[in-house]
Length: 428
Image (cartoon, rainbow, N blue to C red; front, side):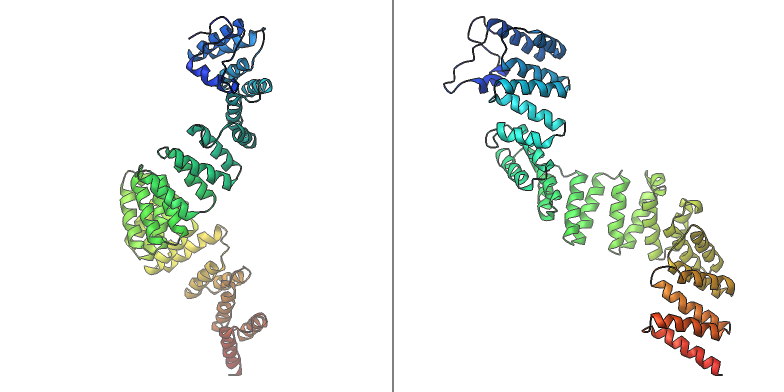
């Protein structure tokens, strides 16, 4: 529908909306010069036909009596070409001519939101969009702007308004979930996620949110159930497998982890799972906990010795000891130490194995190094080294070492017992 020549414009439905804010309180129609009316009508047809560049050229070429509507249409045309800088300029020009033009204010707010200028977007929406009457898209944008500005009170108010006015629009429910997560409102997040699951029961991300909420409430059973549901919704995601295995292992359910591991490694994700360090560490830890040595051996072989992590070297050492292979256990610990191990407990363990094998110099070296590291096991290394000195008939060295240790830790009863043993041996 075109504009008629004359003083009163007959507008298309879209332009009627645009002009609503330019009418006076008596609802008088907007009066435009004939040439401007024709221009706007032609530009509107260009926009409706997807000829955005033509609309821009046409509107920019006009040299007659100007009106805010020309700048408004120009802003719309620039937005459709994703030219946000020129769109913002056009909307600002429209507002400069008519500060009450709602459509220009809303258009500028949308542009500012796309530019990440959330404070300006929220300011404009607060001025031109009423939460009680605006459309869902605008109310949602207003709530998103408030969330970006970390205004939790305003975000909550707008989200609740959106849920009340548009109960079937799930975007407000999703924003409510995000709002609760931002505020660490785990109970609220669980309620929001459970509501969304009534319409999207196979959404794995929602089940993960339920799992997080259950975890925050220390509801381990509920957390594991939610993680399992998330995994069932998307069994092709290794991250979900890892999360499920972690939860099960933390709960001590190593048989479930081993069973799940067998199925996972034999299934379509087997190759990817075997290459996933996190997944394999969980599976090997579970098999080690349950002393499932045959399974453990098979899984260690799937990783390959060169790709073994610290946890895997420790598992390999324990497996070797259970099978009576002390040399293999020492080799596993040696590889860990060569890689830069800093845990004194590992050095104490390696030293003990060396001592068991009567490799006295190596045992002494390992114990001595363990004493230089941080952590409680370094104190234990002192006792092991003193005991080694006693076994090798070095009573004076053992006594000197223990006295220095007791000067720092006078409450250490085992050290006092060893010192008494050294003194008794010397008196003999």
